[in-house]
Length: 168
Image (tube, rainbow, N blue to C red; front, side, top):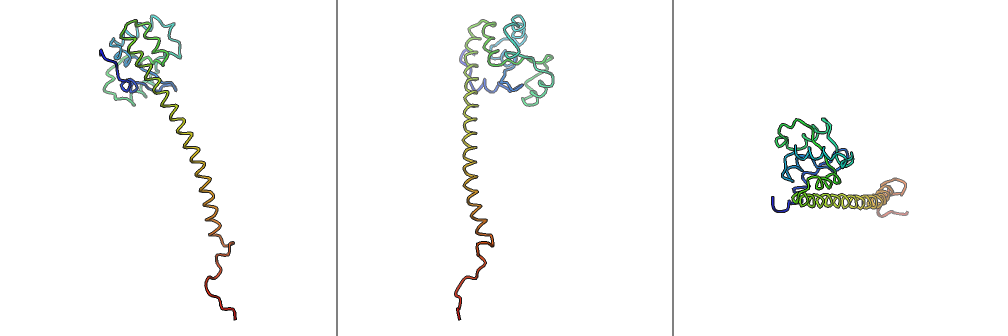
């Protein structure tokens, strides 16, 4: 992996757990080209750098739920629940892994998180615009329906006979 990792490859490894965008230890270990146990050992040795909002271990239920959403054959037989790293936790990893590879990979991962953040912002803006369009359309259709209701109602005299009336 001498070349930079594609951002799309990274964004596919970002999951939402506990309403936070996270990457799992096994995915990060693969990107950094280290064993998962080495990554976890380094994190545990430097646990003060990883408060709960930087890194947390998944509960067995969260792990099972996540496994059901991901291709289960790639998970293998892990005995331990994975660690989940938020964007800040991933940034902290480059400091404890302390290699040029870790720094290059972290830069790409940070770019992926930024790209996801922009997508969320764009999505929120699009949603606001759709809501405005919906309310505007509902107001216009309400006028149309009111006119149609008036035309259909008997009060407007639509039941009068139409045509030539002989006034003898």
